[in-house]
Length: 214
Image: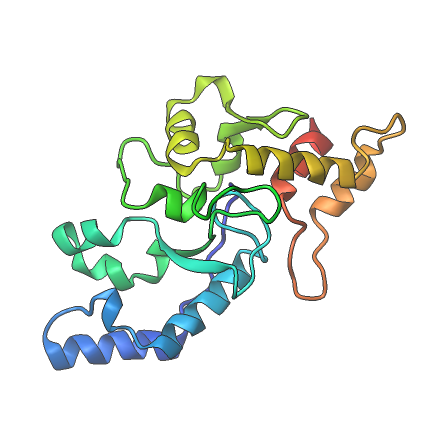
């Protein structure tokens, strides 16, 4: 997980929500949002997340991601209807599957989290220091820093320690030459902050950053 700096919500989307609320005298449910607006939102989420899943930091595309409600939709219906369409409650999550590594879809991230939410034990990607709650091993394993209780719970409920993710993170380290005798931390630091032509960061840059600055 890494900090996500949200962009301003698309003006067309905000106008739609405002118009719907005025016409119906109540906030829309997520199911009321037209498909073209959902697509608009997901496209912007991917841009502001620099091409990374909001939870595992693996590469996502329009075809390999879905809109994730951090505060789950079923709780929105019960406790706060407006959060269903709150721009700041939505992110882009991967499908929890890595080709040739995963056994089934939904092993981790948004689909694994499903309707789980505990206000006292969540770590949001909107928290600037969210990444400092976790540590990594050279084998790609993720751990809670200093036995951070929130991190322990998040790892469990999001499946962030599943085999597929551990292997993918290890491969990310291999790609930067971490296991070579002449591993260059300075070069790794440049890779961490370098975006491609789409403005995307390297896949699993969180573990790369961890070992580049360790």
